[in-house]
Length: 109
Image 1 (cartoon, rainbow, N blue to C red):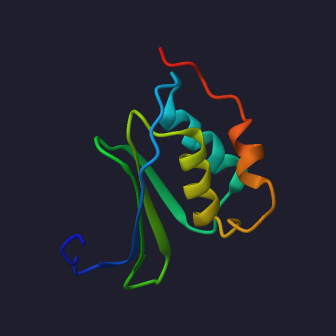
Image 2: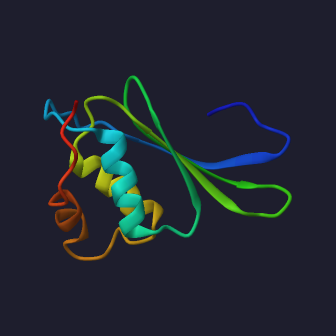
């Protein structure tokens, strides 16, 4: 777990290990899904080298929730969609991940 910050606390950290060689812009895809899902917290998306990583936390002062989503170059559509559905509180919605995986992604350029 990351070192403690005087202004933020990390509440949970999740790892997703599925890998894919499919060619698409994973960061853009994650941002597309964020627009669709509109989670009730601030989410920052960044490129991660090894694995799909989700960190959640809360600012100590105003108690606003936040999340960091680290997306590696070999993440699957399903793992990105599943992580974002969970952040949105919709992980139990039937067929949601399937519908999100059907969302077209920009081709890698």
